[in-house]
Structure formats: C-alpha cells, structure tokens
Image (cartoon, rainbow, N blue to C red):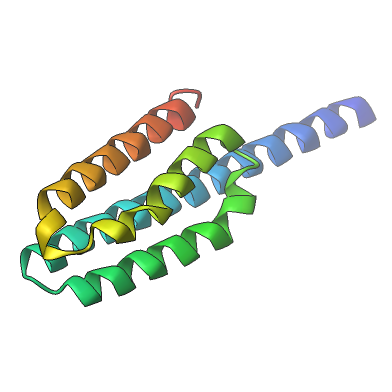
Length: 122
C-alpha cells in the first residue's frame, strides 16, 4: 500500500509542477508580448522616451523571471530572447521606427516559438 501512496504522491507533485510551470511560462510570455505591443503603440504615437522606459521595464521584469523560466525552457532560447530585448532600446528613435517594428515583430515570433516549444510538450 505504501508503494501506491508514494506513486500517487509523485504523480500529484508532477501534476502540480506542470500546472505551476504552465502558469509561469504563459504569464511571462503574455506580459512580454503585451509590453512589446505597448512599445509599438508608444512609438507610433511619437512617445519615444516613454517607449524606452517601457523597454527598460520589460527587460528588467524579464531578467527577474529568467532564472525561474530556465527551469522550464532551455537557456539558449532565453538568452536569445534577452539579447534581442536588450538591443531593442536602440531603435526607439523617430528615424528607426520601421526597424523597431521589424525587431518587435521578430521578438513576438521568438515568443511564439518558445510558446510552441513549451506548450507543444504538454
């Protein structure tokens, strides 16, 4: 009987870990995508300083969550995403609006790819 309880306990722990991972990854990716959309809106409205501040806050929030996300997502994917985020603030200028939109589109595609990698395994 103790073997059955141990197996049930392990199964319950794995189920709980899966649910926690799903919420964490989904919430992080959704907040990143929402932040990128906000950056696009701010730049389209001409608020480039506010867009730089938004990029800074997105990057800081991502860096805080990165260690926990690394439990569920490969580090190389997370590093690629961080590198792209860190370079995004250079495009927050009126002369580089099209480049910014292109880079945010690439970042959103990366987020979508990470989402497919993670949730495709569930």
